[in-house]
Length: 145
Image (cartoon, rainbow, N blue to C red; front, top):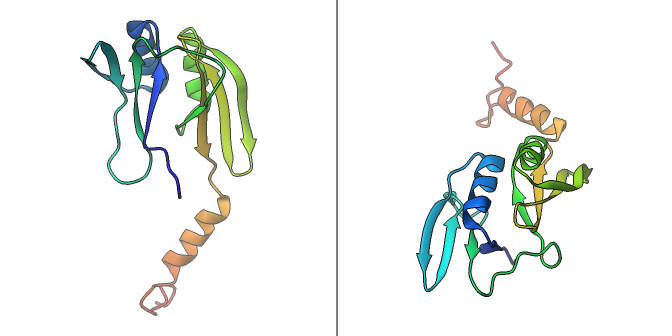
């Protein structure tokens, strides 16, 4: 299996980009600079799932709507799209159900295409969880009284 481990989103104006991404995702990015490049890091979660990344301003970082698409996992895609537009971005692909996910694409403050993705809850999962709760795993039936 191949899983993304890091991403970098090119920016030309780090202050503007940080304001945009902090507004859209309601997170605080941590700024740093080294070797002539400025960066603002997304918060990384604990555990093996997912990846971390940064906004990066530097000579070889050129924002583009073309090229590789980064999909950011975010539960509230509709809210993120609304906040992206309010923060100066635009909608490139409105939130749409694709199989068992909701996806959308926005143009960020720097002109990058950024995709958003969220798993859709399967209503059967809730029924399975309830059935599992009712049937005790040690063989005792929770329905017995």
